[in-house]
Length: 307
Image (cartoon, rainbow, N blue to C red; front, side, top):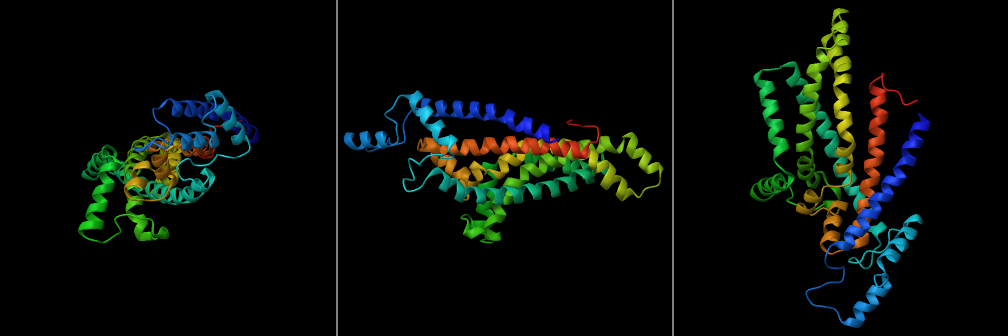
């Protein structure tokens, strides 16, 4: 197992290198620059800024300079937030995104698993049809529609919850963003659990467990549910990475200082280093969570071996 983990981590290095390289050059292809304004800067000021941030050098030289700093763990200074480095911005935003995403992920797993299991046990009933309809609705409605509606209804019309802001992580401030993030994941998890649970309930080992007279709760909650979790575990890799690194739409609408919001601001203002830092964080999370998913898959399914 250790050898497999080591091979996966070593194999991730070329992947990250390709992502960094493509992101670096694609950012430079986009029109505009970090110091373009409606009111143009004086030529001498612009020249000094380009020299300080090495933007006056050839593109290949800028790339090598960035890679050299990256090897030392330096993501560079932010072009827009002049008094902060990229590490400082991501260091302040990442815990907020992880807190929101982690809570939304746990909520989605719990609610989606319960709904999917109930629908599978009541297959072709009104409950099953209702769960399927709600899940389909949850998947099709995007976050940029749900977030303003929740903010408008519960924050503006009824005044029950804050319409935006972080509030030092107060539960009232977290509730609407977490629900917005969790809703589509609840729908996806519910559909995955329902389909795989129906198949698991008809499998041979579950029939054998029933034939031995095991309680229904043990048959469903242990034997069938363990097999039904496998598709969800496979899905959790990219889903967890996306949730834990912040949602661009949700953090922007609710005014949360997570890395998703920094990514939007960096992209709009051509803050090359800030965007690159966010891309690297997301890529690392995807690689790590895919590895965790593979290890969990082997733990849940004894037929899978990574020897």
